[in-house]
Amino acid sequence: MGAADQGSAMQADCPFCQIISGDEPARTVATWDDAMAFFPRTPATLGHTLLVPRRHVPDIWSMTRPEAARLGELALEVAESLRDTLRPDGLNVIQSNGAAATQTVPHLHVHLVPRWADDRMGGIWPPPGEWPPEDLDDALARVRRSPPGAGPRSSTP
Ligand SMILES: [Zn+2]
Image (tube, rainbow, N blue to C red):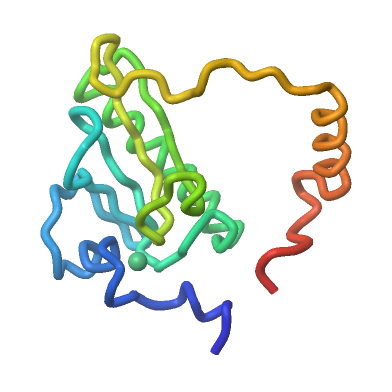
């Protein structure tokens, strides 16, 4: 047993695993063999939908490449459905990892949030910040040392 087993099964204390197993009710939008979409208990806007893989995957870094591709495909399908049925003015796709990023349920989920010009959600970005150019250059140099596609270098063993 180790970190690799972490995502392999339902976690009894996970609220999303409880919804997926049917132990807890939810307003279900759609189900698939490998994923489920439902309204959260306290939606941010009308039609706010959560898309979750059935497997208890804690965060984006714990997904396999095929799981990530599949989740992206399903996010598009949910977004299309919300657009065609609720006719929002826009849509946010929000996916948060870690407490610092406001993730509160440790089961990977994608928020699809239909938006209207006068909805209660408001802006999702802070006021513009000023960054010293040397900080940006340093951050860029660090990212380029392990660019997208290079594969995992640290974190999970
Ligand atoms: Zn779970």
